[in-house]
Length: 340
Image 1 (cartoon, rainbow, N blue to C red):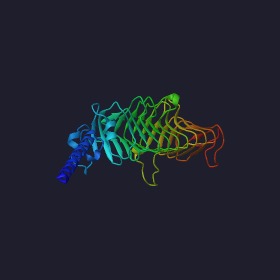
Image 2: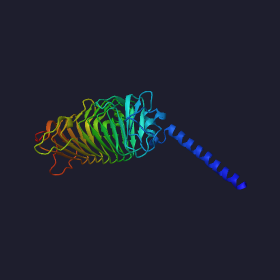
Image 3: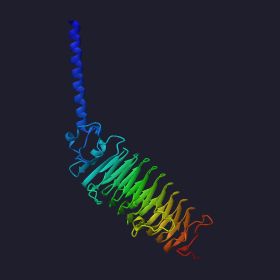
Image 4: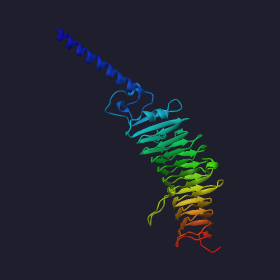
């Protein structure tokens, strides 16, 4: 009898323990900490609809819709399981600055799939995350537009990034990588901090194509501290450039259209530049099949190469002569080199 009582007690204890453990899991699911437990019957669902999504731990979602300003984009980001390829569709303008540290997240304002901007944020910061994409968003506010740092890798595509008063339109620093394509980037930055439409620093890389970068506070593009910026595409012989692929940099009211400094590497192909260009501090500017309407000022032992395919109107001024023999020398015009 004593053994029977012990056996019944042991079974009861297991039942109670199992019940308590199951309850703990359910509460965790409701809190949204384990997104892999959420099953979607359709491609998207509302972010706060927790109960409807707690069905199948073997079928995690691939996307979610956030309706602003009622719901939080940052909460949706926090809920994504690490390593899951996940899209957060944003509807409405969110008065929210968000941070991404997880791989595989896409923020999109193209919920309807019609290629138009339907959502927005005040700032997007990505630190260390890979395979991140920011697309079809209106990004404007008191911070930076999109900030890429600490080795993060981001595609920034078809956004309107404008009037961000606390930083660059797109800032890529600390070995970050960004592919920036088909965006409108205008009115960003603070002149006292030399902020630009796109700024690179600390060994970072940006590949740019099809952007309109117009009248940002200090410069359209600022490349420094051993970073690499490539604008446009090399077009194979016999092929024609799609006009949509051409970058356009316009700086009518700021200091420079392009500022390449502190060993910056600047590579322009099939680009239109309106405004002055500065190359300083052992930097290098290589230009082909590009129109430049503005002067180029080269100093501090920097290198400049303008191919015969460069057109436009302006002069090149060399403050110091530390150029390779095949590079353009001091005070020559664009496009036809001539003595001063």
